[in-house]
Length: 292
Image 1 (cartoon, rainbow, N blue to C red):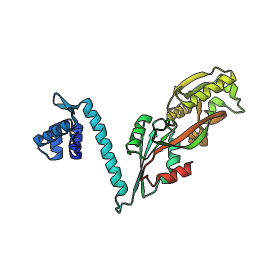
Image 2: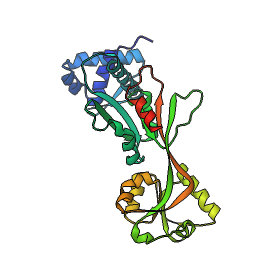
Image 3: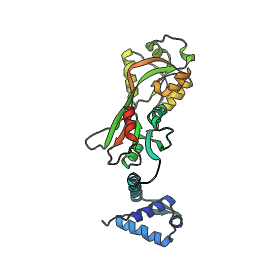
């Protein structure tokens, strides 16, 4: 196969973004015929058509979609190389963080706290699914991924998994529901509706094992996969929430919620996922050390 021309890839990306040769040519300050010739040359190099026309719109073919994904990864890597190696008078460093969309916001803030307010640092925080974030980490679009789901590791895995914290889990509710203590865990679980994580989570597995040992069949008010929603449902008095106190630390401090009982043996683990890089982000190592 002939060598791929990066200039052709940039032109291809512009056409894919605009979905039009005319619009892309105008944006690139090229003639439409010259741009069309460059795209055809790239298609010949790759051996596949990259676009198909649907009315007035150019739509990526399956080969085009694959080519665009690889092109984006190539350009991100080039930008990362340039930012890492060039020596300029730039005064601000950038840390690009991905966080699982369902992860506790309080935990994210605690991890990033040493950087917040620093005039020489910019934090770029993106949320998404585990798969999306790991793809971004693999393509060097992210420096670290924060998650409570440790990715599987084997001999071929590129991930470095740092366990940052293991938070205890409690049964938490409103003062109006709980009244004054003392509270007995078994009675609360048998009497009150419970708000808890879905079955796909390690935390839920531990809770199910706990109630089985206690011989209880609790009533479930809601099952959600989002810590932020667990927090809101607890505040709205939907039931007693099975949740790490760190997630609702502000509500506990203000007396909006009460920690009724600790769930012994249950813990929520938080991880930072990185990958080996020859030029790692200098901001990251101190954060990992302080959070470990």
